Length: 423
Image (cartoon, rainbow, N blue to C red; front, side, top):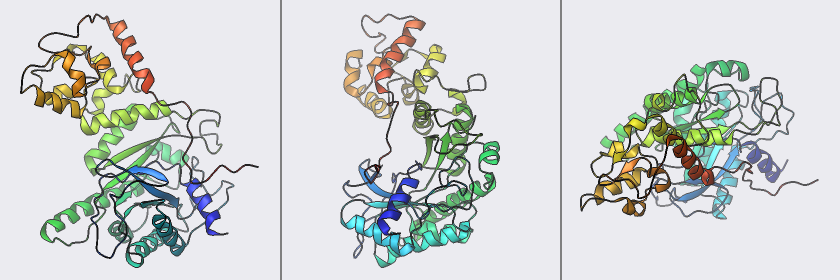
């Protein structure tokens, strides 16, 4: 099997992994090395640098051969799929070739579990060592830590990569037992804790020693599959909140389950991926990370799933109308962030602008406030927007109408390096 055929198989096998971002990586230019984490965009799998610019990564598996039989996975051992594997030398050479052709600016490397977690991790380490040491590649690398691999190997991998991720995949231990019996909660959380502790230790060492080696400087992330099990939005969001609190993850990624294999325990193949639900979870995740919300504020046992008609912030506002309207000329930063249509940037602009003089509703759009939502929930100098009248029913209809143009398209196509193969 030639390299191009391997690449076709292993990039297609990697496309269901959503935990792919370079946000937070700042690898400075180095004399005698090639590549940078803040280069200009060009290429294959789109991601983002720490300053918000789009970058591109080669997103590939080292191998799609796997000893595990996870029911939801296209690469499970019992699935009749064409198998391939790169040698470390092949993949390192391919990455550098793509970089020199300006196709990509970095690498996102994952793998099926080949022979054992330790054997797979050793192959990944050899690949990254070739890139860093032989080819002097200084660009961004995101590597998947394999649950069950020895701590020594996880540590070596972390010193070669900018970011590590350990995929939880299924939100509950019961789901793991049913659909991924070869995995366990303990095997997944153990490397997460190790990465968190070693990353903190690395930062402390850098304070004392300027040239100390850096361990996964862009932190760690994980991915949760949405829709493969009966777990509620509340359960998923509480899990995400716990991961942010306990392991200081940079991101939790949510992936709507796409039926790629048939199994009695999984949704049928004709069931559409829950893309809107995934979208709402991302919005709620943003509220947890940047807006000061907690999972228990957004959902509870009596309302365990989001109303997909409006975004989670609007849902919270509709359930807490006693909190509104908020007077923008006197409210603190935390209260401003609770207003639908007011984001982090627009809240800071309001705080800055009102130092000059009192604000009025006709000025807010210029500050970045989305008035189609915000107008129902704020006052400026004691007044709401001119001519605005609404009831609770018309308020909901107005928010639904404002939301509809922003919803994700019902159908999508995964980006691919190659043209579709036709018969």
